[in-house]
Structures are given as structure tokens and as C-alpha cells.
Image (cartoon, rainbow, N blue to C red; front, side, top):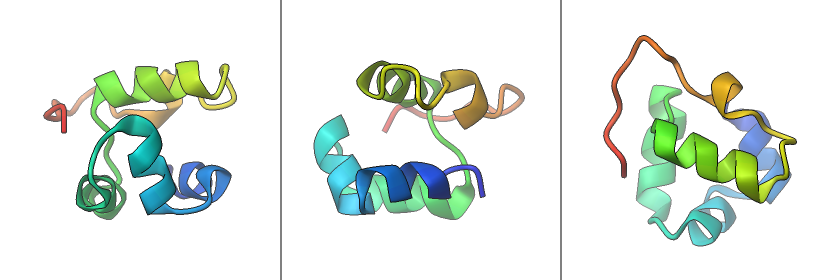
Length: 67
């Protein structure tokens, strides 16, 4: 799953949720679906100074909501 390294980097789903200003439930959904809204992927790329690239975090063929 492509989001597991991201969760490990931040320490937990709850920690990632806090940083992004979303609920832990939203993060859990992204992990379960292995899908991240593009807007959040860009936010994560910026927060991590490029450690995680937005293009690696999203599936360009799927349209996700912006939770």
C-alpha cells in the first residue's frame, strides 16, 4: 500500500490527520482505499519538503474527493 510509508513517517493516522487538518476517519478511509485526494497529496509534498512526491501518492486515473 502506497500510504503506509506516509503513516509511518508521521507516526500515526491521527498525527497525519492533525497535520492536514482532517479527521482520523478521513485518513483511515484513504489508507483503506489506498487512495489520497490530489489536493492532500500536494499538501503532503509541501509539508515534507518533497520527501513524499504528490505524483507517487495519487492514482491519476481515479478522481477522489477532497476530504
